[in-house]
Structure formats: C-alpha cells, structure tokens
Length: 236
Image (cartoon, rainbow, N blue to C red):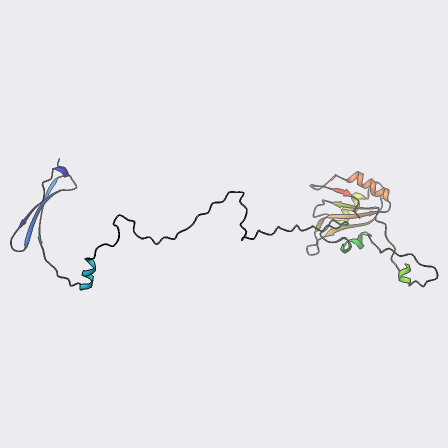
C-alpha cells in the first residue's frame, strides 16, 4: 500500500505554446496511488500604482524590528488594600444608621402612643389630669373643680389576654373566663378596622380584683385552639 512519503515528485513540462503540463500523484479515498495531469497557462497582469505609494514602500524602517509594536490598550493601575484598610481622606465615610425606637402602647401593646389608644374608652382605662388644689375664698370654675369631670374607672380588675386565634369572639371568652361564679363586667376583642378579624388579644374586666386574679391563675398558659393564652394585667 502506497503512502504519502513514497509518492513521486511532481513533474512540470513546458509545452512551448504558453501552456505547462504538471504531472503529480496523490492517494484516493481507498489509499491507492492516482496519477493526475494538469495543464495551466501563466499570464502576466500589469497593474498601475501611484508613484508615491511605490516610493513609500521603499522607505527604510524607522524603528527596531525586534521592538514590540505600538499598543492601544488602556493603562489601568491596580491598587490593593488590606482588609483593615481605612478609607482615604477624600472619601466620605457612610453615615451611621439611626436606630428607630419602637412605639408600644402600655394599654393594648399596639404600635401607637398610650394616650392615643383606641381601646381606652372601651376598657374603662381613663387617665384624667390631676386637679390642682383649690384656694379658699377663690372662685373656681365648675370644670376645674371636677363638677362635670367624668369619674375615673378602676382598671385594677381588667385582664389582658393575648395570643388568641383569629376566630375568637366575645361570647367564647365570656363563657371561658366567667366560670366558677366570676362576674364579667366588660369583654372586648381587638379587631382589625378593615377586615374585622381578631388581632390576637382581648381585654376582660371583672367586678372585683380577686376574680381577675383567680382567672389569671386558672387560665394563664392554657391552650385555646392551637395556641397558648397569655393572661396578665395591663401595664399602666
């Protein structure tokens, strides 16, 4: 079997009529030697070039041939800083973040001020301004003397019940906390203004402080639905 290295060299013959005969050998797809004969004609084509272009081609090179060619890359300077590096003087340090104090109501534990609690009137927790002492012999207006002032209700017998399910209502709480002869004066479940769904806490007022304490000891930490109730007196 023939190989590329054993093929004869090409033979070029000038026919004298402007044609040349080229004879060479190659291997086909089956690996067999095949003889190929070609006839070619050589022609010369004249092309006009401006004298200035031809003169520039003859110029000598004005640079060292071994030197690197000119580059158009951008020169980027890399600065490395350690992890504990301080910012430079020209750079402004980021201002510290301010801590926003959370507002918690002492009555219902909501996100508003205590004096603006919407459940103060319903729970009987009313804070009246202190009435100054009157001076004998001096006229005192009826409103300042307390004649028309609203009586301050006692909230010492009121319990705050939290961690309640969304489906809780006043009837269920009244039946649960009114056991064993305890008398409930008021029962209010805090609800969402838009959806009217329970917000998870309620206020229950008893007729005596002793009844409220017994209800707290009996029901604090008890399960209601899938949650555990938290019963305590509201903070003032």
